[in-house]
Length: 180
Image (cartoon, rainbow, N blue to C red; front, side, top):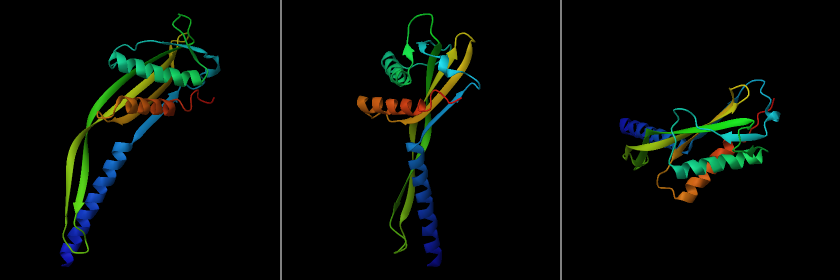
């Protein structure tokens, strides 16, 4: 009887560990940024979109949505988009999507009556990463880079996808420009 109770504790513990791991992994959103030390961001007032050589880009619709979301954030920071050759900053982005395994744990029964079962199922999830880079054209130097990573749900409707993109870009540019 004591051995059976101990086994149930182990099963329940494993089920809870898998469940917590799965919840933390799925809902995780990671945003990081870095700036060139000593860069004077007060001199930047305009920016221009440029392609990054060798970068991966989504289809034209998603490309326009990403650029519009970033444009909104940069406008809120006082930057103006230009198509002319005299931009203070050049900005580009690239995206990637990786497939990762996720474990979902389930438990039935309980410890009170001894018994119950625990099981885990594996599924594949998509993790999307967007990297935005800003270059100073005068120095030909990277002055700021930011990365946002989020679990993607292909079943989300268009409005939900746009909302998630806008939230990620707001979080990414929250501390832009960096304090000197």
